Image 1: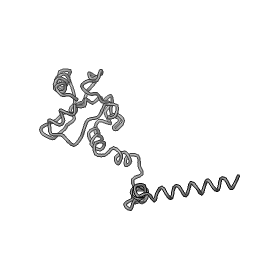
Image 2: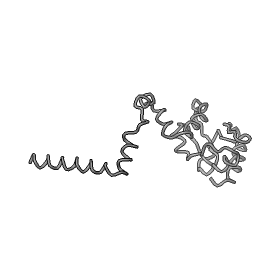
Image 3: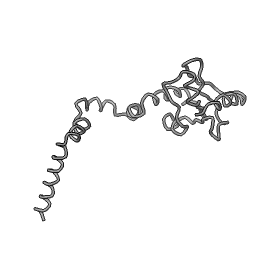
Image 4: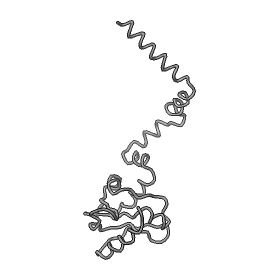
Length: 157
């Protein structure tokens, strides 16, 4: 019984060693596992939750957090997100708007888009001011919200 287990173990090790001598697997092994640029001490410096989220989700995540930095302290905030086509037309190409659920996951702030069923709950909006600038604007009246919705409905997404 022990000889059978030992023989199978040695056979497995031999197959693994032969497999990683094939050039494509060998390259993968050295590129992904034994990377020369992997710095363990640098990875330990960025072990916090926010650091890992920034590394995983990238530039857009950082921009979303920057946008809502001032809204986190305001209760009952519902942010109206503009369509991507509107942002691109206004010269804002470095971010893409996400779905409201994903925006909430990233930032913790409730949001809606122009097609959401509860869009009339929005009390803040992201608007483009000029070419390339995006601002937070408080929605004070229903007319302001309706004019923004009319503007956003021209755009596909």
